[in-house]
Image 1 (tube, one colour):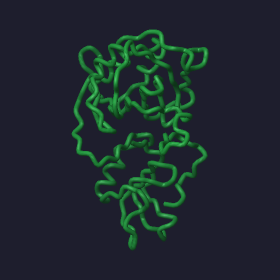
Image 2: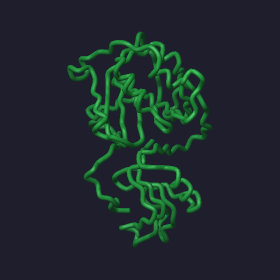
Image 3: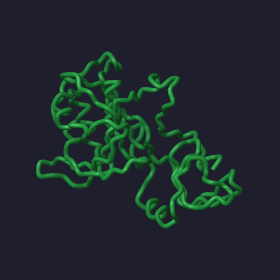
Length: 244
């Protein structure tokens, strides 16, 4: 599961003898990307997802920086659901403050004023994270009224449609990690989040917002020594990735 970091219509490889890689969409800073084009004499460009030029062009036209991309070998048909939005519109209340600064939560939208929004509920951290354009702009601890077992990572994408009660429809995109289907409605009934944070998060949800509910930790400290990384925006990276 990735977010698009950079895009370039006419990209040429710097290590494969200038091979054309049109409609390049960068997924990781070490050079993995979506792109069209063939590499004569090479089975593939190391780890990239190579697409037909027709499809690559169409895909390029509907994505933007920070759009979510999921690469999987599983067959899965997305389905519409209203349940994910309940996590930010249902029961709210005090959450443990000792995990965060004295203010209780962090909310700094000025760090990234625009771009695609991703909201991550980490059951391992008991923390809700909000990213915009790959930059963390908010986080808060949350409480569960009772213990609940969640397996895998469950991904949802916000749609344009809104029902008569003002609740936005979501697309259930995929379940990564082989866990059972998640009962989001039941989860929302036992999740308590600081009210002000809920208000802030609701205000930036738009069509295309990604919501992830996962049993994995997100905090960088939790991943030291593990084969796991979270890719976020890095202004120091070159405009055109090296090695591609």
